[in-house]
Length: 193
Image 1: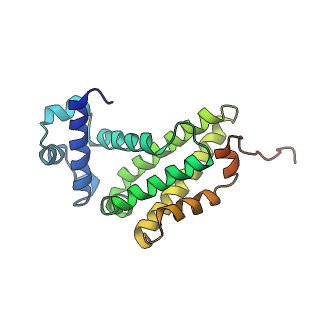
Image 2: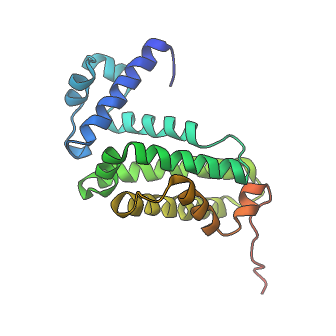
Image 3: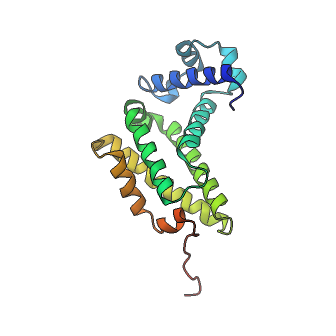
């Protein structure tokens, strides 16, 4: 969606306003008017770029994914990307604690989860086009479900664990992680057994 520096400034202002407002109230209670007032952006400008606040949140999530997911990761690149994810969540702990742990933000968290699944599925499809789409979909749900559950637990109870250690632990928990991030397709069980 990046069109020009002026548009990028508008996106940045609106995303900052959304982040700030999430620290104050649930996503479902945030109105476009609140976002525009906080960002100093006219409503017509908002609607020139976004359909609604869910579209803005989706845009923000997609920008995060562009930063965190390397285009063709190997094992080390992916672990480094996970470290960046955990460092980002730690830096923005207050906002993400509200977004992920407040049950009133379930719809926003679900949107976040779906975007992460979509991006990870795209990564698997790019790296392993020979793996059936149903397997890619299942693995994406499994992986992102585990990642976001770990983020929930970490934000709720234990952000003293350093992001580097958390990323290394998470990668070790992924079945066939060397195959997935080392370039070989995941092993499939022999269905004839």
